[in-house]
Length: 141
Ligand SMILES: [Zn+2]
Image (cartoon, protein in one colour):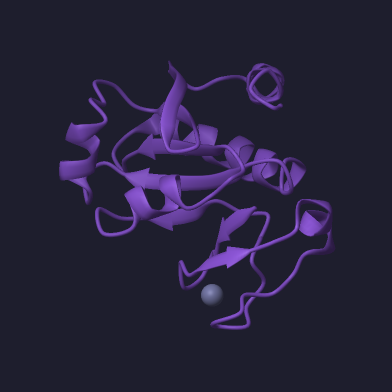
């Protein structure tokens, strides 16, 4: 499968049964999977969604949004728990207004799950940790 490097965004080919071996990027030699959400921008968000064969989940947030901030640690924990089953990204909708517009983000926080580059589900509002886990699990496989 293809996995996009968490650091340099190079597309790496990883055998499906080696995903839990935590390989390094062929280009920059950093770990491919960090177990933490990756800060995305207008410049790389589409690449990240398209060049990952694991499902991608993105937290659309902003600095001024209180619920986004209290949600952030839960998202961080989920990124560790689902390290080998999802790719986690965060998009600051204030800095990346053009992508936020393209994804039609009307309220934040909003979470969107993408599979093979396509949106499969979204939820708005800060999910409690258990609901977040359940929601993520429902989109695996
Ligand atoms: Zn890299």
